Image (tube, rainbow, N blue to C red; front, side, top):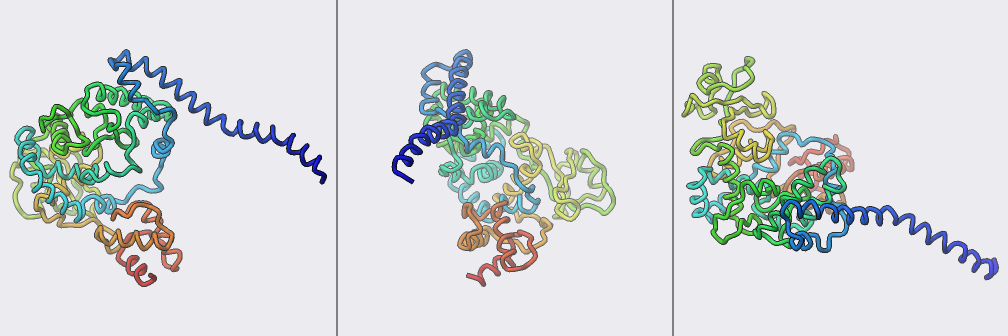
Amino acid sequence: MSSLLLSRRRFFLAPVVLLSCLLFSLPLLAADAGFQQWVREFRQTALKNGISPEVFDRAFEGIDAPDQWVLDKASYQPEFKAPVWQYFDNRVQKRAIRMGRAKKEELQPWLDKIEQRYGVNPNVLLAIWSIESSFGAILDNDKVIRSVVRSLATLAYADPKRSRFGRQQLLAALKILESGDIDEKHLVGSWAGAMGHTQFIPTSYQAYAVDIDGDGKRDIWNSVPDALATAASLLSSNGWRRGETWGYEVTIPERKLPAGKLPLRKWEQLGVKRVNGKSFPRPGDIAELKLPAGREGPAFLMLKNFFVLKRYNNSDRYATAVGLLADQIGGGKGLVRDWPRPFTPLDPAEVEEMQKLLKARGYYQGEIDGKAGSGTRKAVQQFEEEIGVEVQGYPSKEVLEALRERQ
């Protein structure tokens, strides 16, 4: 082909290539332009709700597009719901108990002050802190902690299911900035706007945040006393009963038991007993029987404080995990009847070792965190396929031994 023909082809192809590039980039440019228009319109809403122009403009400085990571997290659908043993193994475990006890010793004067004011058991606050942010460790993870303003604006603008939530929480976040408790640089949180050591969304922060350390700011990001007092404020405001527990592990008879809530003395008459053989200290208290893993697992009679814990996170598993972890931070021995599992479980250090070995084989891409989540289970399944055994995906001692043998 002659150089003239080549040059003519380049001449005619150049506009086509340029047009293709422009067309490819148009959706992104349109999305950015649409987002910027949305911000301008939302600015008027914010100003009508008491946000100053200066605060709004500082909050959105440099934010000119939605955060795709937030949208990915919002649309993520797990392939399976974590089995009950996995949920509790990842939250009520030796490392959390050990750290909870150390933090209790370190913060005892503050915990005493918070308990005196709000009546909430310090062990419960430490358990919440552990489950919500791993005692604050998550706040240093740039992969999951983002600008609250950008995250909520992204949900309000681009997620139809969470648009109303995003707008409501974004206004509350701007009001936090307006109050001066935190500045826009440090107003950070999860993809859904949960903030600080105890992971409060902005509206909950507004309702319950406390400045217990007396520095003039309700700072749940940098002041652990403020964060724990804020959690205690939420529980106290929702009916926490001072000096009472959250529930009892119990044994149950073989026969069918009634649903609903009954006085403890009535449950005892029906054959429901505390696992330690002791009597219920307040037999008139109302309780509800819960079997998180069915009759094959531990059984509990849940009291008023269990349902108050659900005001923090409306999940039976969450409230049970907080209660169980709190009891062990306080010196309790843990469950008498363990969760039913089809394998021999690992402790967090062994899970970390498993994750490292799976990563070395190219199967695991996640954090080395000692928590056997969906990524770890997928990696285990791939390893089991490789070695030709039944594919189950359980983070078991048997799989760990097989990994060690093949290093």
